[in-house]
Length: 75
Image 1 (tube, rainbow, N blue to C red):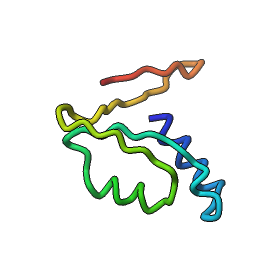
Image 2: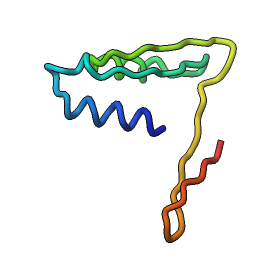
Image 3: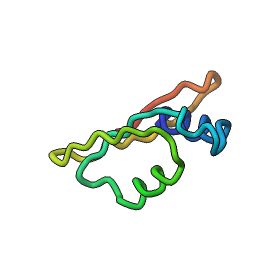
Image 4: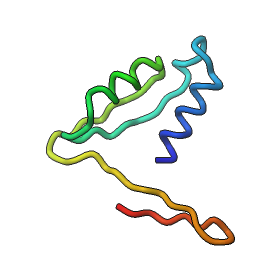
């Protein structure tokens, strides 16, 4: 979602030297791929993984449409 895009953008701007200054939270369900976690950890940000094995990871698609780019979500 938007939070992930913001964290990735901030990490790119921060560079390796200031990567730890980028802080964010990822909610992890029982189906969260391990390779995603490994990739996120490799960025060196301050990421809090909140794990809940009793649920699935939240997923959504954000679509933008119309003249004013109205955002809609499909869960």
